[in-house]
Length: 188
Image (cartoon, rainbow, N blue to C red; front, top):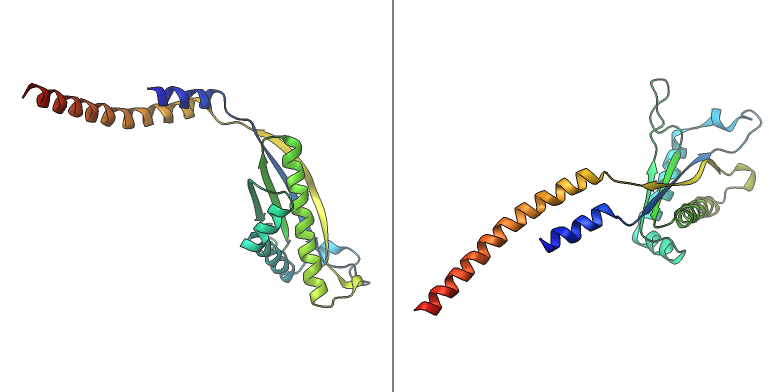
């Protein structure tokens, strides 16, 4: 009962968390015959973007993010921008999310992830010796915006009640058997 009461207090007064989310897109360079970068999107751009995401999701990348001050829960989600007209993953956009206890901290974590993603894409191009004029660029489509996360209290309480019954009944039966054995030993 005490554990259920403590759990109910946590369900009714949860620790506030904020989810910040931003969307970026990797664009090809502007060329003379393609002045609009968005008309020159090719599937290899999505592959380059995904390679940078994999670098950040590796153990070394996680260490790099921790060193930059990004800890807790964060996600890098390649977005499926395909439609019935364009194939899937043609537009290399990436949704970046971070959960923190405050809105400013969540937004700062997302900005830091974007900064490190940009660094990885730039480093990849530098390693290949691509001239500055022919480099891909990163554009922020949706800036970081933190929103308070709130769960459904009634669902949380229902789940807690179920756990209390499932855990409480066996605990009561076990305690009853233990006490009955102790009283039988004392009487004999």
